[in-house]
Length: 156
Image (cartoon, rainbow, N blue to C red; front, side, top):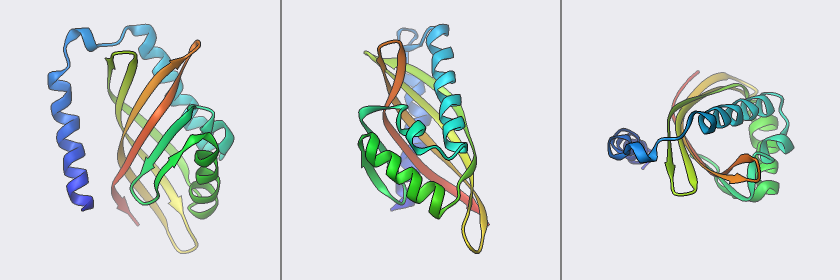
């Protein structure tokens, strides 16, 4: 099942940009703001600050992962980061790469890759994956409404 999801993700991420037209591109200022959001995310995550990570999501935002399902709302996202990402897996060195940013109505869709190191009692492993953010403007800032992140490989 995971292989089918990964294959579907790859097909979507490769085919979808083909259908995007000039009207769907974002302006340079918006692109800069999305890059700043990504940097804030990496900083909060790598500082093991679950409240700061959750603050980057909309109040009703969702975080979808390969192994831990869907977390809805800032409080659930913060608890997940604290207990799973930071305490259980000791996540560090998260890097997110932006591959494509398109505008769809009032939303911005960010397609990219991530990699991170996880340490448990026995192993340190590097994990890589793909993500899709659906971002919406809240006042002067962009926030993540949906974060769909899936692991595609790991090394021990």
